[in-house]
Structure formats: structure tokens, C-alpha cells
Amino acid sequence: MVESRLTGPVRVVGAGLLGTSVALGLRARGIEVILDDASPTHVAVAVDLGAGRTSASDDAPELVVVAVPPDVTARVVAAELDAFPDAVVTDVASVKAGILAELVAAGADVSRYIGSHPLAGRERGGPLAARADLFAGRPWVVAAHDAISYQRASAVDDLILDLGATLVEMTPEDHDRGVALVSHVPQVISSLMARRFLDAPNAALGLAGQGVRDVTRVAASDPDLWVQILGANAQPVRDILLAYRDDLDRFIDALAAPTAPGARRRVAEELTGGNTGVARLPGKHGTDKRFTTVIVMVDDRPGQLARLLAEIGEIGVNLEDLRLEHSPGRQVGLAEIQVLPEAADRLTNELAERGWRIAG
Image (cartoon, rainbow, N blue to C red; front, side, top):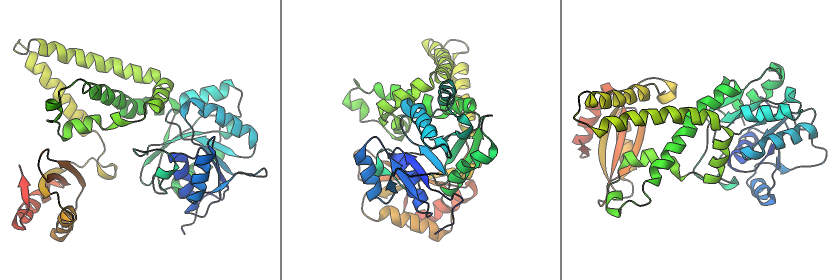
């Protein structure tokens, strides 16, 4: 068992995906975890999973982690601050500035509160979807403010490091603007794009490839949760959407007369801007290295993908990333293997010699 920075006990309020994952990760390090939730069923399931124990009247937690929906987070945090006057309290909601403002307005003791936000999740919610390693290698923002001392806030830092996450310090306002750009607005755009499919002919949807699936993947997210998130972070999201609308208007105007002087240049500038923007996204391990994609055709039979990955290892090329796309109407998948540019030719040639079909 790896030694923990926290001494515990840690109280986790909210036994859903995030809360139970926090609890499982702490239990793996030997930390005593106290579980609470408005749903007795969620608590019972989390306890059965080994995530901790139920609360008792004499509990004295070192740290309280509030993992409840955004629209009740401030109220629950305030109640926990009152109930446990010696504990530091954090929350894992995806918005930060509004919660802090609500606590200050309510007169809560924010000298023991600091908001945080792990950028991790899964397609499914609830305690059964929880994993002890959910946060490993993921960014976890600590939204510092002037009312709490560094010494008190260190308990939250210890929590983050114990769970294997990467600590990122931001102000609540910078956090909310940041997640609006990289999470909340993409959710809106993805959902609106997928909504175009409602009345689309089946023949058109049958043409869908990996590109449209990438753009609309998060459109399958829980609408109830996103109504809360977007309402809590409305202004930053609105500001970005207004700028996005301006971008769309320029594109629409250019397409209205595509042969007019300057129209093609405007379209090219918008597309090139996208190239430049995506190049700024951090790559593997947060680096800015760029990779080359080798596309391999893989028969849809048991063991074929495993054999491909094993042979890439035998060739001695490091696989930087992998994406699998299924070919409509054919029993074959397209494995998009990302490698360093200097390794691409050797990998392509040696895989072809081993009988693999290279696409493109």
C-alpha cells in the first residue's frame, strides 16, 4: 500500500461517480472514508464496493469532499462547514466562482473552504461506474481565494496528489472561463450539431464517419446535469458563443457567394485558423509534439487488434495514440495508429511485410 499524504478520516458527501471514485482511491491508500448521500441506495452500493463506511455521530473528518450536483453544491458545502468546524471543505463541481460568491453572501466560513474541480469522468454515472484510478494523470484545478491560508488549503493539495491527479492552481474566475472554452461551449456545439440529425434521412446518416462521431460524441451527455452547469457558468459560455456566432456569420456570408472576389480567401483563413488553434492543444504528456497517423485495416475477428498492437511492439515503435473506426457495411475496422513522424515509414513498411493492409 502506497503511503498517503492525508491522515484522515475524509468525509465524502455524494456517492455518485466522482464521490465514490474519490473514496475508492483514498481507501486504496488506507485512508478512512466516511460516506454520505441523499440516496441511501447510493451509499449502500458504495459501501459494498469497499469505498468507505456510513457516517456516525462522533465523526471528526480532517477533510470533507462535496460531490453533489452544481445547483445544491453551495448549500451542502455551507452545511458541512457548520457541522464540522475543524474540517477543511472542498467541492468537485465544474463551476467555481458562483459557489464561492454564494457562500460568502450566506456568511459561511470560507477560511476553511476551497473549491476544486477534477477534469475527469466517464460516460456513465453512479457509484457502480466509479474507479479508484479515475483521476490518475488528469488535471485537477484548485480554485484559490484570499480568505483561506496555504496551510489549510494543503489538505486539498494532498488529496489531489494522493489520487494521482495533476494539481493546477487557478482563480475561480479563470477556471470558469477556461472550462467554458474547453468543455462547456464544446458541449453546446456538439449537442446542436447532433440535433441536426433528428430529421436527417437515414441514407445521409449512413454516410457518417469518424469525423462526425468525434464532433458529436459528448452530445450523449446527461441533459439535466448540463442545464445546471450551463446555468451556473452562463456568462462565460455566452461570451464565447457570441464570438462563435460572429465566426459563423463570416463563414455563412462567404458561402453565400463562393465565387465572389475574396470569398475563398475568407473560407481558407477560417479553416487555417482552426489548424493553428488545434495545434496549440497539448499532446501526449502535455507536450507539443505532433504525430503521424498510420491507418491499418483490421479484420473484425477476435484477437486481431491485440495481434496488431503486439506486432507494433515487436517492431520497436512506440504507439503514441490509437483510435479505432469501424467501416460501415464491412467486417473491418480502421486502426489509426499515431507515432512519431520519423517512425512512420518504418512502421508502415514492416507492418505491410507482415501482411497487414495499410489504408491510404
